[in-house]
Length: 153
Image (tube, rainbow, N blue to C red; front, side):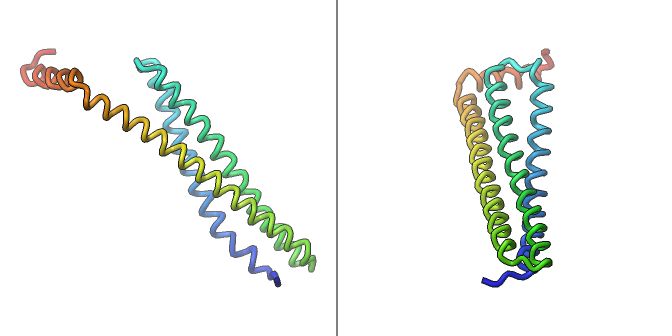
């Protein structure tokens, strides 16, 4: 297999976009953690809140790994390009292979993080469905609505 300087350069846009997506996921989770932290004093279901925080901590660890492996892949692409420039084609092939493996690992961890995220959302949905099916919950909403309409506080 022939490897040219363009080969690792093809990964630059893909890795850059992945890192941007990973950063956006991190920022969304960080914002959610801050909100949950603020709600900690007001929350009556502290156990559920702590469970959410544990899930978010695990997701943050996944994102840290995803970002680290993505940056490592990017760094290996640059080293590969330098090796090709200097004429070390055999070394460049191995470094490029490592770059691809690093990128693949990053994507697999991303898949795990997505699965973790969907499990958390499904758990919240089941809680909402239980509340909606709870007859006393519906009665409380109706009573609150009636109180609002009659002006009673």
